[in-house]
Amino acid sequence: MEKSAPRRIGANPRLYDADSEVPMLFGVECSRCSRVYFPPIGIGCETCGAAELTVTALAAVGTVFAVATVHVHPGNPPAPFTIADVLLDAGPLIRALVHPDAGGLEIGSRVVGTWLASAAEGDTRIVEPAFVPAPPGEAP
Image (tube, rainbow, N blue to C red; front, side):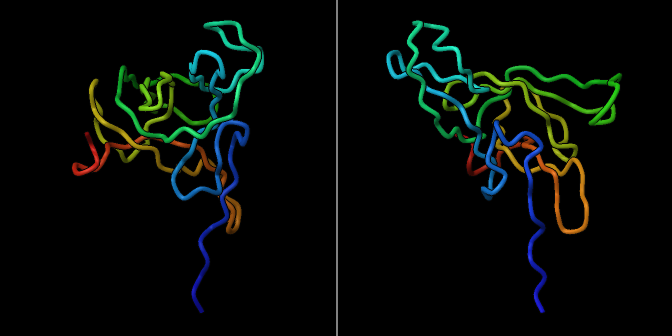
């Protein structure tokens, strides 16, 4: 009998869809000026003040803008771990985890999101997006 894939639950389901095969982030786009934000904001557009924001799916694909390793951190994830500011192809600059298996990322590296399990119980995984280097053929 073939074993089914573990069930994924998002550590923060307001920010992404854990059911998608690859991470898709939930952002918002201003209907007036087209500015895209992540994480989603509910106060109106910070650029033009419009109240009409539309939820939009953002592919977890972009370019490393900055990268740092955290050596002291009281909690989950345990230190050391690496974070990166990633300029998403869809527009917003986000701060995100770098997958522990990603190796060294540098400013300007192309990255894609993958799922990182932060906890597991039975066949259920608590996941959040983490970035890894984009495969060579997929990096524009």
